[in-house]
Image (cartoon, rainbow, N blue to C red; front, side, top):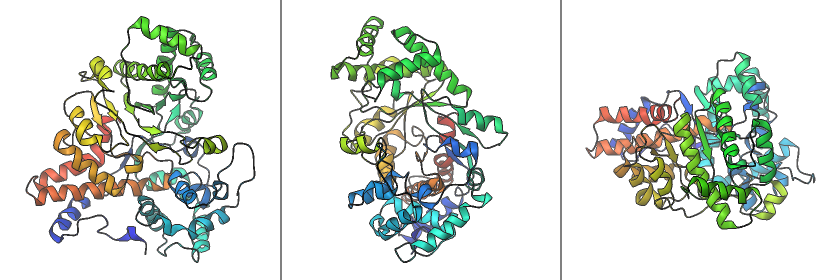
Length: 469
Protein backbone atom coordinates (compact mmCIF):
# COMPACT_ATOMS: atom_id res chain seq x y z
CA UNK A 1 0.00 0.00 0.00
CA UNK A 2 0.97 3.69 -0.28
CA UNK A 3 1.64 4.35 3.41
CA UNK A 4 1.47 8.15 3.29
CA UNK A 5 -2.26 8.21 2.48
CA UNK A 6 -3.31 7.14 5.99
CA UNK A 7 -4.74 10.24 7.72
CA UNK A 8 -3.28 9.11 11.06
CA UNK A 9 0.24 8.65 9.72
CA UNK A 10 2.77 9.04 12.56
CA UNK A 11 0.11 9.87 15.16
CA UNK A 12 0.11 8.05 18.54
CA UNK A 13 -1.73 4.72 18.69
CA UNK A 14 -3.65 5.66 21.86
CA UNK A 15 -7.08 6.90 20.76
CA UNK A 16 -7.25 9.92 23.07
CA UNK A 17 -3.79 11.21 22.27
CA UNK A 18 -4.31 10.48 18.59
CA UNK A 19 -7.43 12.64 18.64
CA UNK A 20 -5.46 15.53 20.13
CA UNK A 21 -2.75 15.13 17.49
CA UNK A 22 -5.38 15.19 14.73
CA UNK A 23 -6.80 18.44 16.09
CA UNK A 24 -3.38 20.09 16.31
CA UNK A 25 -2.40 18.93 12.83
CA UNK A 26 -5.64 20.22 11.32
CA UNK A 27 -4.68 23.68 12.50
CA UNK A 28 -1.27 23.75 10.78
CA UNK A 29 -1.29 21.32 7.84
CA UNK A 30 -2.17 24.04 5.31
CA UNK A 31 0.35 26.63 6.53
CA UNK A 32 2.77 27.90 3.87
CA UNK A 33 6.16 26.23 3.65
CA UNK A 34 9.17 28.23 4.76
CA UNK A 35 12.27 26.39 3.52
CA UNK A 36 15.18 28.40 4.95
CA UNK A 37 18.02 26.06 4.04
CA UNK A 38 18.34 23.58 1.19
CA UNK A 39 20.14 22.60 -1.97
CA UNK A 40 17.60 22.78 -4.77
CA UNK A 41 19.00 24.15 -8.02
CA UNK A 42 18.16 27.84 -8.67
CA UNK A 43 18.45 27.04 -12.38
CA UNK A 44 15.07 25.28 -12.12
CA UNK A 45 13.26 28.40 -11.00
CA UNK A 46 15.21 30.69 -13.36
CA UNK A 47 14.58 28.74 -16.58
CA UNK A 48 11.31 27.06 -15.57
CA UNK A 49 11.92 24.22 -18.02
CA UNK A 50 10.19 20.83 -17.73
CA UNK A 51 12.04 18.29 -15.59
CA UNK A 52 13.88 15.80 -17.80
CA UNK A 53 12.34 12.47 -16.76
CA UNK A 54 11.25 10.63 -13.60
CA UNK A 55 14.68 9.11 -12.97
CA UNK A 56 16.60 12.37 -13.33
CA UNK A 57 14.14 14.13 -11.06
CA UNK A 58 13.63 11.55 -8.32
CA UNK A 59 16.54 9.08 -8.31
CA UNK A 60 19.87 10.22 -9.77
CA UNK A 61 20.41 13.35 -7.61
CA UNK A 62 19.06 11.85 -4.36
CA UNK A 63 21.91 10.50 -2.25
CA UNK A 64 19.45 8.85 0.17
CA UNK A 65 18.31 6.63 -2.70
CA UNK A 66 21.58 5.90 -4.46
CA UNK A 67 23.48 5.07 -1.27
CA UNK A 68 20.90 2.46 -0.26
CA UNK A 69 20.92 0.83 -3.68
CA UNK A 70 24.72 0.95 -3.86
CA UNK A 71 24.90 -0.74 -0.43
CA UNK A 72 23.01 -3.66 -1.99
CA UNK A 73 25.49 -4.06 -4.84
CA UNK A 74 23.99 -1.88 -7.58
CA UNK A 75 26.67 0.15 -9.35
CA UNK A 76 26.31 3.92 -9.26
CA UNK A 77 26.82 3.96 -13.02
CA UNK A 78 23.73 1.80 -13.39
CA UNK A 79 21.76 4.42 -11.45
CA UNK A 80 22.72 7.19 -13.85
CA UNK A 81 25.57 8.64 -11.79
CA UNK A 82 28.25 9.89 -14.17
CA UNK A 83 31.92 9.06 -13.47
CA UNK A 84 34.27 12.03 -13.59
CA UNK A 85 36.54 10.33 -16.11
CA UNK A 86 33.87 10.11 -18.79
CA UNK A 87 33.35 6.34 -18.51
CA UNK A 88 30.03 4.94 -19.72
CA UNK A 89 27.01 5.10 -17.42
CA UNK A 90 23.30 4.45 -17.75
CA UNK A 91 21.48 7.28 -19.52
CA UNK A 92 18.15 5.58 -20.13
CA UNK A 93 15.74 6.97 -17.52
CA UNK A 94 13.37 4.05 -17.86
CA UNK A 95 16.14 1.51 -17.26
CA UNK A 96 17.23 3.40 -14.14
CA UNK A 97 13.64 3.56 -12.93
CA UNK A 98 13.16 -0.19 -13.39
CA UNK A 99 16.24 -0.95 -11.28
CA UNK A 100 14.93 1.37 -8.60
CA UNK A 101 11.42 -0.13 -8.69
CA UNK A 102 12.71 -3.70 -8.48
CA UNK A 103 14.49 -2.74 -5.26
CA UNK A 104 11.95 -0.38 -3.74
CA UNK A 105 11.36 -2.90 -0.95
CA UNK A 106 14.81 -1.94 0.40
CA UNK A 107 13.35 1.33 1.64
CA UNK A 108 10.74 -0.23 3.92
CA UNK A 109 10.71 1.55 7.29
CA UNK A 110 12.90 4.43 6.09
CA UNK A 111 11.96 8.12 5.79
CA UNK A 112 12.81 7.86 2.09
CA UNK A 113 9.85 5.49 1.71
CA UNK A 114 7.55 7.99 3.45
CA UNK A 115 8.71 10.87 1.27
CA UNK A 116 8.49 8.94 -1.99
CA UNK A 117 5.08 7.46 -1.25
CA UNK A 118 3.87 10.97 -0.44
CA UNK A 119 5.24 12.23 -3.77
CA UNK A 120 3.66 9.35 -5.72
CA UNK A 121 0.27 9.82 -4.09
CA UNK A 122 -0.08 13.57 -3.55
CA UNK A 123 1.86 14.93 -6.51
CA UNK A 124 1.33 12.30 -9.19
CA UNK A 125 -1.95 10.73 -8.07
CA UNK A 126 -0.51 7.19 -7.95
CA UNK A 127 -1.93 4.82 -5.34
CA UNK A 128 -0.58 1.54 -6.74
CA UNK A 129 2.49 0.33 -4.80
CA UNK A 130 5.77 0.53 -6.68
CA UNK A 131 7.49 -2.72 -7.62
CA UNK A 132 8.92 -4.41 -10.71
CA UNK A 133 5.46 -5.12 -12.12
CA UNK A 134 4.22 -1.54 -11.77
CA UNK A 135 7.49 0.19 -12.70
CA UNK A 136 6.57 1.13 -16.25
CA UNK A 137 3.08 2.32 -15.28
CA UNK A 138 4.57 4.60 -12.62
CA UNK A 139 7.19 5.87 -15.05
CA UNK A 140 4.72 6.60 -17.83
CA UNK A 141 2.30 8.39 -15.50
CA UNK A 142 5.02 10.58 -14.02
CA UNK A 143 6.68 11.28 -17.38
CA UNK A 144 3.37 12.39 -18.90
CA UNK A 145 2.68 14.75 -16.02
CA UNK A 146 6.19 16.23 -16.08
CA UNK A 147 5.60 17.26 -19.69
CA UNK A 148 2.69 19.49 -18.63
CA UNK A 149 3.09 23.18 -17.87
CA UNK A 150 1.52 22.77 -14.43
CA UNK A 151 4.40 20.46 -13.45
CA UNK A 152 7.15 22.92 -14.29
CA UNK A 153 9.23 24.21 -11.34
CA UNK A 154 7.42 27.51 -10.84
CA UNK A 155 3.99 25.88 -11.00
CA UNK A 156 5.07 23.27 -8.44
CA UNK A 157 6.51 26.01 -6.25
CA UNK A 158 3.01 27.47 -6.09
CA UNK A 159 1.27 24.11 -5.70
CA UNK A 160 3.57 23.20 -2.82
CA UNK A 161 2.51 26.42 -1.09
CA UNK A 162 6.13 27.54 -0.68
CA UNK A 163 6.37 31.05 0.71
CA UNK A 164 10.15 31.26 0.46
CA UNK A 165 12.98 28.86 -0.29
CA UNK A 166 16.71 29.31 0.26
CA UNK A 167 19.27 27.64 -1.97
CA UNK A 168 22.97 27.34 -1.13
CA UNK A 169 25.77 28.68 -3.33
CA UNK A 170 29.53 28.73 -2.93
CA UNK A 171 31.54 31.89 -2.37
CA UNK A 172 32.80 31.80 -5.98
CA UNK A 173 29.34 31.50 -7.56
CA UNK A 174 28.26 34.45 -9.73
CA UNK A 175 24.61 33.97 -8.66
CA UNK A 176 23.54 34.33 -12.28
CA UNK A 177 20.48 32.13 -11.81
CA UNK A 178 19.38 34.23 -8.85
CA UNK A 179 19.74 37.41 -10.87
CA UNK A 180 17.64 35.82 -13.61
CA UNK A 181 14.94 34.90 -11.10
CA UNK A 182 14.96 38.43 -9.68
CA UNK A 183 14.73 40.05 -13.10
CA UNK A 184 12.04 37.71 -14.44
CA UNK A 185 9.15 39.32 -12.63
CA UNK A 186 8.03 35.97 -11.21
CA UNK A 187 6.70 36.54 -7.67
CA UNK A 188 8.13 33.33 -6.18
CA UNK A 189 10.68 34.12 -3.48
CA UNK A 190 13.98 32.25 -3.91
CA UNK A 191 16.98 33.50 -1.94
CA UNK A 192 20.59 32.37 -1.79
CA UNK A 193 22.85 31.37 1.13
CA UNK A 194 26.56 32.16 1.47
CA UNK A 195 28.59 28.92 1.67
CA UNK A 196 32.35 29.74 1.81
CA UNK A 197 33.78 26.23 2.39
CA UNK A 198 35.82 26.25 -0.84
CA UNK A 199 37.77 29.32 0.32
CA UNK A 200 37.83 28.51 4.05
CA UNK A 201 38.81 24.84 4.22
CA UNK A 202 42.46 24.19 3.25
CA UNK A 203 41.52 20.56 2.53
CA UNK A 204 38.93 21.56 -0.08
CA UNK A 205 40.05 20.54 -3.55
CA UNK A 206 41.74 23.38 -5.42
CA UNK A 207 41.93 25.55 -2.30
CA UNK A 208 44.90 27.68 -3.42
CA UNK A 209 43.40 28.30 -6.85
CA UNK A 210 40.08 29.05 -5.18
CA UNK A 211 41.74 31.81 -3.14
CA UNK A 212 43.26 33.25 -6.31
CA UNK A 213 39.83 33.29 -7.95
CA UNK A 214 38.35 34.77 -4.76
CA UNK A 215 40.73 37.68 -5.13
CA UNK A 216 39.98 38.13 -8.82
CA UNK A 217 36.23 38.40 -8.43
CA UNK A 218 36.39 40.73 -5.42
CA UNK A 219 39.39 42.86 -6.37
CA UNK A 220 40.85 42.14 -2.93
CA UNK A 221 44.38 40.92 -2.24
CA UNK A 222 43.74 37.41 -0.94
CA UNK A 223 47.47 36.96 -0.49
CA UNK A 224 47.22 38.67 2.89
CA UNK A 225 44.95 38.32 5.89
CA UNK A 226 43.32 41.74 5.73
CA UNK A 227 42.54 41.42 2.02
CA UNK A 228 41.23 37.89 2.49
CA UNK A 229 38.78 38.98 5.20
CA UNK A 230 37.70 41.94 3.09
CA UNK A 231 36.95 39.57 0.21
CA UNK A 232 34.56 37.67 2.48
CA UNK A 233 32.86 40.88 3.56
CA UNK A 234 32.41 41.90 -0.05
CA UNK A 235 30.98 38.56 -1.13
CA UNK A 236 28.64 38.42 1.84
CA UNK A 237 27.32 41.84 0.85
CA UNK A 238 26.90 40.63 -2.74
CA UNK A 239 24.94 37.59 -1.57
CA UNK A 240 22.76 39.79 0.67
CA UNK A 241 21.95 41.89 -2.38
CA UNK A 242 20.39 38.79 -3.95
CA UNK A 243 18.32 37.91 -0.93
CA UNK A 244 20.67 36.00 1.37
CA UNK A 245 19.72 36.13 5.03
CA UNK A 246 22.16 33.45 6.20
CA UNK A 247 25.54 31.83 5.73
CA UNK A 248 26.28 28.11 6.02
CA UNK A 249 29.44 26.33 7.11
CA UNK A 250 30.01 22.61 6.59
CA UNK A 251 33.09 22.02 8.75
CA UNK A 252 34.40 18.62 9.78
CA UNK A 253 34.12 19.60 13.45
CA UNK A 254 32.57 22.38 15.53
CA UNK A 255 36.02 23.53 16.64
CA UNK A 256 36.45 27.31 16.89
CA UNK A 257 39.41 29.52 17.80
CA UNK A 258 39.93 33.11 18.88
CA UNK A 259 43.49 34.05 17.93
CA UNK A 260 45.03 37.47 18.24
CA UNK A 261 45.18 39.53 15.07
CA UNK A 262 48.91 38.92 14.74
CA UNK A 263 48.58 35.17 15.30
CA UNK A 264 45.72 34.90 12.80
CA UNK A 265 47.70 36.84 10.21
CA UNK A 266 50.72 34.58 10.63
CA UNK A 267 48.55 31.46 10.46
CA UNK A 268 46.94 32.67 7.23
CA UNK A 269 50.38 33.29 5.71
CA UNK A 270 51.39 29.70 6.40
CA UNK A 271 48.10 28.35 5.05
CA UNK A 272 48.35 30.53 1.95
CA UNK A 273 51.82 29.13 1.28
CA UNK A 274 50.35 25.62 1.34
CA UNK A 275 51.05 24.35 4.85
CA UNK A 276 50.59 20.59 5.10
CA UNK A 277 50.52 20.68 8.91
CA UNK A 278 47.14 19.21 9.83
CA UNK A 279 47.10 21.10 13.15
CA UNK A 280 47.49 24.41 11.33
CA UNK A 281 44.84 23.56 8.77
CA UNK A 282 42.43 22.55 11.54
CA UNK A 283 43.22 25.72 13.49
CA UNK A 284 42.56 27.86 10.42
CA UNK A 285 39.12 26.34 9.93
CA UNK A 286 38.42 26.92 13.61
CA UNK A 287 39.49 30.56 13.43
CA UNK A 288 37.36 31.15 10.37
CA UNK A 289 34.20 30.04 12.16
CA UNK A 290 34.80 32.77 14.72
CA UNK A 291 35.61 35.29 11.99
CA UNK A 292 32.38 34.41 10.19
CA UNK A 293 30.44 34.86 13.45
CA UNK A 294 31.94 38.32 13.90
CA UNK A 295 31.00 39.21 10.34
CA UNK A 296 27.46 38.00 11.00
CA UNK A 297 27.30 40.32 13.98
CA UNK A 298 28.27 43.17 11.65
CA UNK A 299 26.15 42.39 8.58
CA UNK A 300 23.19 40.54 10.11
CA UNK A 301 23.50 37.24 8.26
CA UNK A 302 22.30 34.32 10.35
CA UNK A 303 25.14 31.81 10.76
CA UNK A 304 24.55 28.07 10.34
CA UNK A 305 27.15 25.51 11.40
CA UNK A 306 26.73 21.98 9.98
CA UNK A 307 29.63 20.03 11.54
CA UNK A 308 30.44 16.44 12.20
CA UNK A 309 30.30 14.75 8.81
CA UNK A 310 33.26 12.85 7.45
CA UNK A 311 32.65 13.95 3.90
CA UNK A 312 33.50 11.64 1.02
CA UNK A 313 34.53 8.82 3.35
CA UNK A 314 35.35 6.54 0.42
CA UNK A 315 38.34 8.00 -1.39
CA UNK A 316 37.74 5.66 -4.31
CA UNK A 317 34.13 6.80 -4.76
CA UNK A 318 35.13 10.44 -4.39
CA UNK A 319 37.83 10.22 -7.04
CA UNK A 320 35.51 8.36 -9.41
CA UNK A 321 32.25 10.26 -8.88
CA UNK A 322 32.99 13.42 -6.89
CA UNK A 323 31.14 14.93 -3.94
CA UNK A 324 27.69 14.21 -2.56
CA UNK A 325 27.31 10.61 -3.65
CA UNK A 326 26.20 9.17 -0.32
CA UNK A 327 29.57 8.59 1.33
CA UNK A 328 29.32 11.27 4.02
CA UNK A 329 29.35 9.58 7.44
CA UNK A 330 28.50 11.07 10.88
CA UNK A 331 31.26 11.38 13.46
CA UNK A 332 31.39 12.03 17.20
CA UNK A 333 31.32 15.77 17.77
CA UNK A 334 32.27 17.93 20.76
CA UNK A 335 30.46 21.24 21.23
CA UNK A 336 31.11 22.46 24.80
CA UNK A 337 34.86 22.78 24.35
CA UNK A 338 34.80 23.35 20.59
CA UNK A 339 32.41 26.31 20.59
CA UNK A 340 33.83 28.05 23.67
CA UNK A 341 36.24 30.39 21.80
CA UNK A 342 33.44 31.57 19.50
CA UNK A 343 31.00 31.92 22.41
CA UNK A 344 33.60 33.80 24.46
CA UNK A 345 33.85 36.24 21.57
CA UNK A 346 30.22 36.73 20.54
CA UNK A 347 28.00 34.25 22.40
CA UNK A 348 26.35 36.86 24.61
CA UNK A 349 25.38 39.09 21.69
CA UNK A 350 21.60 39.38 21.40
CA UNK A 351 21.80 40.65 17.85
CA UNK A 352 23.54 37.51 16.56
CA UNK A 353 21.99 34.17 15.65
CA UNK A 354 24.22 31.09 15.32
CA UNK A 355 22.25 27.95 14.46
CA UNK A 356 24.08 24.74 15.31
CA UNK A 357 23.22 21.34 13.83
CA UNK A 358 24.52 17.93 14.76
CA UNK A 359 24.82 14.39 13.44
CA UNK A 360 25.85 13.20 16.91
CA UNK A 361 22.59 12.71 18.79
CA UNK A 362 24.43 11.93 22.03
CA UNK A 363 25.24 15.65 22.23
CA UNK A 364 21.63 16.90 22.28
CA UNK A 365 20.82 16.58 25.98
CA UNK A 366 24.40 16.60 27.23
CA UNK A 367 25.80 19.61 25.34
CA UNK A 368 23.67 21.38 22.75
CA UNK A 369 20.44 21.95 24.66
CA UNK A 370 22.27 23.30 27.73
CA UNK A 371 24.37 25.61 25.54
CA UNK A 372 21.39 26.94 23.57
CA UNK A 373 19.44 27.17 26.81
CA UNK A 374 21.69 29.94 28.11
CA UNK A 375 23.70 31.65 25.32
CA UNK A 376 21.52 34.32 23.61
CA UNK A 377 23.32 33.95 20.27
CA UNK A 378 22.91 30.18 20.02
CA UNK A 379 19.94 28.28 18.58
CA UNK A 380 19.47 24.58 17.77
CA UNK A 381 18.88 23.48 14.21
CA UNK A 382 16.35 20.64 13.74
CA UNK A 383 17.11 16.96 13.36
CA UNK A 384 19.40 16.85 10.36
CA UNK A 385 20.33 14.53 7.52
CA UNK A 386 20.56 10.96 8.84
CA UNK A 387 18.18 11.97 11.65
CA UNK A 388 15.65 13.77 9.43
CA UNK A 389 13.23 10.95 10.18
CA UNK A 390 10.22 10.40 12.44
CA UNK A 391 12.40 8.71 15.05
CA UNK A 392 15.11 11.36 14.79
CA UNK A 393 12.59 14.19 15.11
CA UNK A 394 11.01 12.58 18.18
CA UNK A 395 14.40 12.08 19.80
CA UNK A 396 15.29 15.70 19.08
CA UNK A 397 12.19 16.99 20.86
CA UNK A 398 12.56 14.56 23.75
CA UNK A 399 16.22 15.38 24.36
CA UNK A 400 16.18 19.15 23.87
CA UNK A 401 12.82 20.50 25.04
CA UNK A 402 13.34 19.98 28.75
CA UNK A 403 16.49 22.15 28.73
CA UNK A 404 16.24 24.47 25.73
CA UNK A 405 12.47 24.65 25.38
CA UNK A 406 10.84 25.15 21.98
CA UNK A 407 11.91 28.74 21.48
CA UNK A 408 15.65 28.12 21.41
CA UNK A 409 15.03 25.96 18.33
CA UNK A 410 14.31 27.20 14.81
CA UNK A 411 11.45 25.11 13.48
CA UNK A 412 12.03 22.75 10.57
CA UNK A 413 14.06 22.92 7.38
CA UNK A 414 14.14 20.25 4.73
CA UNK A 415 17.82 20.63 3.66
CA UNK A 416 17.18 18.76 0.42
CA UNK A 417 18.09 18.60 -3.25
CA UNK A 418 14.92 16.61 -3.96
CA UNK A 419 12.43 19.35 -4.84
CA UNK A 420 9.29 17.14 -5.08
CA UNK A 421 9.89 15.79 -1.56
CA UNK A 422 9.74 19.19 0.15
CA UNK A 423 6.00 19.03 1.01
CA UNK A 424 6.43 15.45 2.23
CA UNK A 425 9.30 16.36 4.53
CA UNK A 426 7.44 19.29 6.05
CA UNK A 427 4.33 17.16 6.47
CA UNK A 428 6.30 14.51 8.35
CA UNK A 429 7.83 17.15 10.64
CA UNK A 430 4.42 18.71 11.34
CA UNK A 431 2.88 15.34 12.15
CA UNK A 432 5.72 14.35 14.48
CA UNK A 433 5.59 17.67 16.31
CA UNK A 434 1.80 17.44 16.70
CA UNK A 435 2.17 13.94 18.11
CA UNK A 436 4.77 15.20 20.60
CA UNK A 437 2.62 18.14 21.65
CA UNK A 438 -0.47 15.94 21.95
CA UNK A 439 1.34 13.77 24.48
CA UNK A 440 2.27 16.83 26.54
CA UNK A 441 -1.38 17.87 26.53
CA UNK A 442 -2.53 14.37 27.48
CA UNK A 443 -0.07 14.40 30.37
CA UNK A 444 -1.44 17.78 31.49
CA UNK A 445 1.92 19.44 30.92
CA UNK A 446 0.61 21.83 28.28
CA UNK A 447 -2.76 23.42 27.61
CA UNK A 448 -4.42 22.72 24.28
CA UNK A 449 -4.47 26.43 23.43
CA UNK A 450 -0.73 26.58 24.08
CA UNK A 451 -0.16 23.44 22.01
CA UNK A 452 -1.92 25.02 19.03
CA UNK A 453 0.31 28.09 19.34
CA UNK A 454 3.49 26.02 19.63
CA UNK A 455 2.48 23.83 16.68
CA UNK A 456 2.11 26.91 14.49
CA UNK A 457 5.45 28.28 15.65
CA UNK A 458 7.26 24.99 14.98
CA UNK A 459 5.72 24.65 11.53
CA UNK A 460 6.04 28.24 10.39
CA UNK A 461 6.85 31.07 12.78
CA UNK A 462 10.18 30.02 14.26
CA UNK A 463 11.87 29.48 10.91
CA UNK A 464 10.69 32.85 9.61
CA UNK A 465 11.94 34.60 12.72
CA UNK A 466 15.26 32.79 13.11
CA UNK A 467 16.23 33.17 9.45
CA UNK A 468 14.84 36.73 9.13
CA UNK A 469 12.48 35.72 6.36
